[in-house]
Image (cartoon, rainbow, N blue to C red):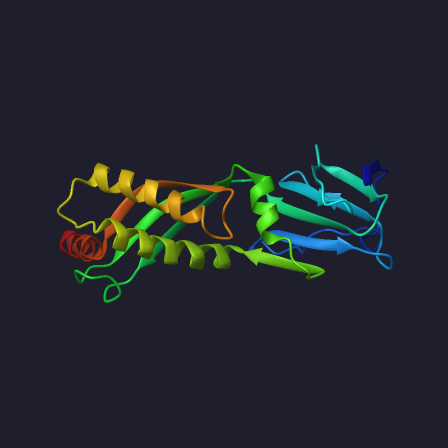
Length: 201
């Protein structure tokens, strides 16, 4: 084991933790010789350590931990599901309509995902915007691959997009995450709803 539980530290200079930025959902840092050897895991985070042997170890509970062998890389991942809306504007897809999807994303296979983001960089982060941009590209590819149209039955569209999005995610750096597509809409429906709202005033 390359780490052990330790006593709480009361000064932030005595331990390492992710930046206090609500947009940062994944943060990683490699602890080396010149670094503080203590790190913190908060209640809303899942954390994993890549030991010098390359073995990936999960952190069982929140608290303070001491690195015993270096170098060791810590990955913090916000533990809640990410609920997002992503859209592909009109003019990008054939058919002249835009598509939007409400979905949630959660980490089901952390070892696979962590294996994808291991890099030579000492530290890095992934923001909610990085994830949203990737999902937008995947939604566009899913709609193109499936050739869905607004005339299709909506439940069938949601099921098809759900399956294809997860198929595509498995080929990207988000592999390890599962996407739960909850609804799919089209751009003209947004315009219709705006018109109905105006008429109701």
